[in-house]
Length: 232
Image 1 (cartoon, rainbow, N blue to C red):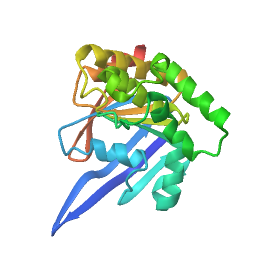
Image 2 (cartoon, one colour):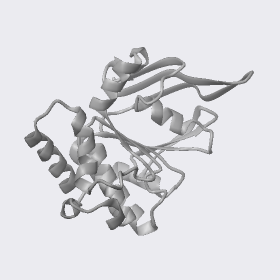
Image 3 (tube, rainbow, N blue to C red):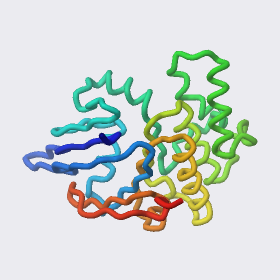
Image 4 (cartoon, one colour):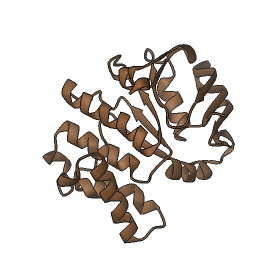
């Protein structure tokens, strides 16, 4: 049994009298610990799929079983609780809070957990160390480069030790050198943490770091290929 199983997964929106189907009966299996890249033109359904797996959105039809739980059956409050325990989200534009230090930004997700201050400090320090930004823990976002900001954002995503990491164009705002550093870091983290990483990207070079790349068009899977990351 795969860690993530999509069966007939459909997302339907009503826009006036028109129906829009960003996902249309998708079947997909993702193994635990896999680094998966999603590609496709705008409107192909890749971000919709990412948001469904992350528990940010709910499917209109079909099943989405993750670790044995069909999250399509969860209520909104149950889904919020499930997401806080299982998912870390990496954004293109970092979404750091300017008035908080790197440490404080990474600490934010842990404030929702019933843990002690000592345990919270351990988690935050370990996350900053893993992404190589511990020496910038007291810096504010404006004092960091784009690559350093994304490292902080990744630390924030992994601090609660989630089973799933989802990344929406994580290198879209970075130069080539910084993008390479971030993608190499994400590749290494999937190996070290055992998290399943699903990344949306328009950059074919970014897919080389993934173990597998799926191409979507009009809400359907049209092709898949192994990446260089599969052998890394």
